[in-house]
Amino acid sequence: DVVMTQSPLSLPVILGQPASISCRSSQSLVHSGGGTYLNWFQQRPGQSPRRLIYQVSYRDSGVPDRFSGSGSGTDFTLKISRVEAEDVGDYYCMQATHWPPWTFGQGTKVVI
Amino acid sequence: EVQLVQSGGGLVQPGGSLRLSCAASGFTFRNLWMSWARQTPEKGLEWVASINEDGGEKYYVDSVKGRFTVSRDNAKNSLFLQMDNLGADDTAVYYCAKGAHFDNWGQGTLVTVSS
Image (spheres, each protein chain N blue to C red):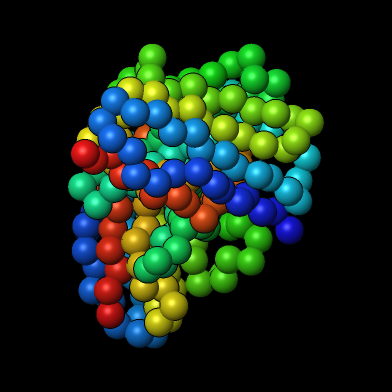
């Protein structure tokens, strides 16, 4: 199984400042067909998870452009260019290349 | 607008059964894989099961194999998770999700296994 490791697990942020979350996989997430299936999810307090980013860097509809995803192979990053109050919550990476099982990172708690 | 409305869940005794349902709308249900995940404070998010478009392929996390059954009714745009022989470790908030890439999530339903 692919193990997803996020860091940090807790991320204190300052409003208006950038923030970054790292996600590493135990093996390359490049699919035999060429795609890389790494997703990022946001979970605000008391809400269901919401996908922000798919295939490493594609933003889902309605996701503010202050969120960006990057990376390749086994190392991936979610960046928030300028943190806003509504960005508080938990963030998870998930791989959908080598399944089953689909596997999630442990989560990163973004706090102000 | 994509909507996934979950029902079912609740309190059940160890060894008991529950059936979760997920009513989908806003997309062509019969054309997409569907998935279930669960969440606990201790283990975080965990994929539980996925089913392909026609229900011919089903996949489960090892810990629920032989106890949980995922199914779907494409005529009713509905997804189900039959959970049997439940144990304390199955206590979690369960989510249904659109696709194999978890595009959209339901509101979640709490399953508590306790005597």
